Length: 75
Image (cartoon, rainbow, N blue to C red; front, side, top):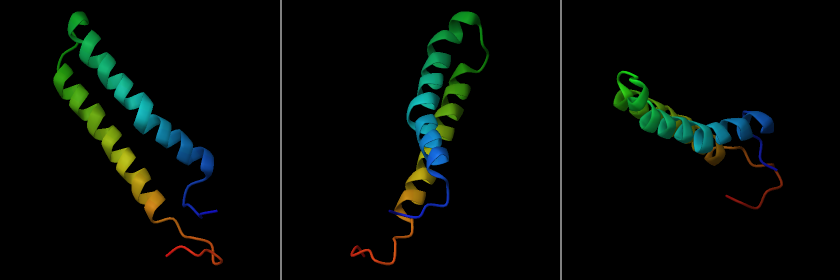
């Protein structure tokens, strides 16, 4: 088992936020926002998507840099 900096529950929660929640919120703001007169919808969607990509990148880096156990054959 790999040793991550984050506990498994936090990792899974952040992964869900980055892959499911933030893109869904961005889509919702982009579609419904103009109908309700929400100002700066394009900017909001871009910002939400950028945060999602950022969180996803951090999770990916965390996964790639996880320390392997001492008895691992992988290099």
